[in-house]
Length: 614
Picture 1 (cartoon, rainbow, N blue to C red):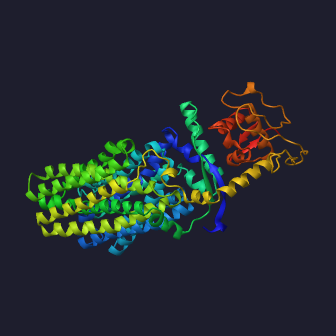
Picture 2 (spheres, rainbow, N blue to C red; picture 1 turned 180 degrees about the horizontal axis):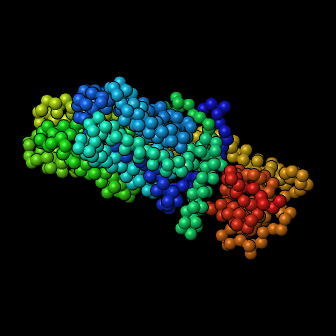
Picture 3 (cartoon, rainbow, N blue to C red; picture 1 turned 30 degrees about the vertical axis):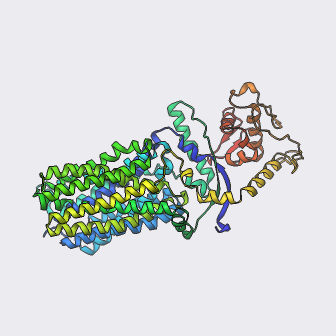
């Protein structure tokens, strides 16, 4: 790594503090503000499919052919792939929050512009930009969600959020029943207003999303530890005030070498050199779900209409019911991904959906039953497949280091969508166009085979990530870098602590010069643990009768003294300076809170600590 972009080495408990939080209003804000991207994507994909027939009619105001509609769909997917790669890299470099606001604005503008389409080339352009916004959302939003949601519920929340795509799909199908009704709206106006639904929803999402903070995990790695502390402290304070219960102390810390940037080449090699098995797993999972889903989604209306004689105006009803079954899967099964575990549930959902797809192929080929029987079996297949597809995004966002998380999501999404998302629709389209049931059944079997491969890969290559801290699943690259110089760093910290406490290299007490105009004085070293000797205090010392039993008056007094001398000071710097690592779990933060309660120190707007004894 280039040393000119290093910032320093810190020890932080921010990840542990986030993961031990109880579910609160803050988490609902994250779910609504960030998870809504999937609803928007589902709305966009089904919207074009449902208004396609109207756009090919004379008098629509744009006069597109069926082939051009298909081209527009491919261009939308291409835009999503490009947007994911471009914005994924920017998300890891400039932060989650900046990018999930930028990508939402891009989507909003492009969607509004779609409603004003006047020619095919213009429609292609705005669909590409709309896809780019959605693709960028995947990278920025999924990485932020995983870094803000507690580990114990991360699986089920991620699955439900990803599964909400199908709420958008159902909504898109339902709204077109109104907007395409020529008894209500003119032929050239209805399809344009349909796109306004996505724009209105995105405005609401933007209002909520503005209140979602930057990921504290991203902040402390990129040299903004004080801001990360301020955000987490604010969340903790709100939760404690709401629940009127004190949060448990975090039980672990992590040492990080902070960075401003990490080179793209370094990011790219992580997946295939450091985690090659995980890379293969993600590719197989993404290609499998993209092949089956895109192949059927883009052609489902044709199957119902062409093979079962369902009227074109009734097809959206079948699509709505099928979409709801897709959403039900992650909602019902999501909890099991956190309890039973990732490996058994992901492999079960992939292989289970493959088995049902084979049954579906047999029923379809034999001409058994009607459209409703076909829909029931299809719904059962995608009840499982939807959980697996959602888990593919969960997997890639969990099992790679934090610095590469957004780009990893973007990369595997783009590759999986480009391979499976293009091959699937082409294969199913050709088979359906032939009008031969046997060929269409074969396409279902091929899709089942690709999904089964994903399940098998999960069995052998899957990672047990349920309930685990993200930094334990895949250590940050900056943590590895910090370990390389751990000895030097510890020596430096010991020297700094000794110097700040008036100690010589051999541990003897030496004179120190106080900050500002204070006189030179000698001070005893603040020793760890309850009942230890306290530091020198020119103001009245803290009595043991003033503090609760779980903290030591000497530790509280030592914190007050050091903040007075070093202010303003971050908790991390204070933690290192007084050797609080040896105090025992939670004693440092309890002592800081007690010093604040007693009124000797306070936390300023930047989140750092300063003395009030002046």
